Amino acid sequence: MTDSSALDPEDRKIVTLARSARARNGVPEGAAVRDETGRTYVAGTVALDSLKLSALQTAVAMAVASGATSLEAAAVVTEADTASDADRAAVRDLGGAGTPVLVAGPDGTVRTTVTAG
Image 1 (cartoon, rainbow, N blue to C red):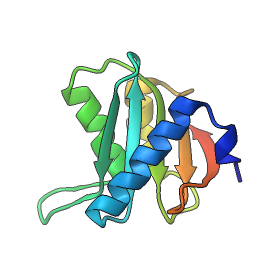
Image 2: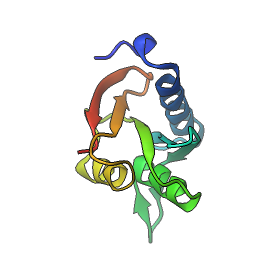
Image 3: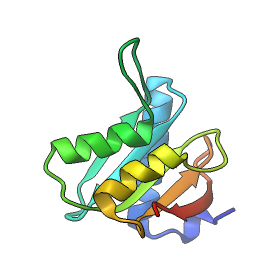
């Protein structure tokens, strides 16, 4: 478990945004990513009959659609123990293998930080 108070303020911000998206939308996961300019993109799980995206995949897609060319960090708030391979791949595609992915529980406590690699 990672002490959330020890996080960099910008990392704490994306965890808070991800948690807020999850709660506000009543979805299984919330996510946020920070691009190379410091802009953040926040999303929840998309579960339509014709389209299924995790919150982190949606946040990455939003960043790409807004012109981001790289990511500094990503966060996902989930019941899962870690970020899925598909989520890490989406972050890796835009941010590179070393991009940190903070994985937090519903209470916002960061459980682990993995790389997109």
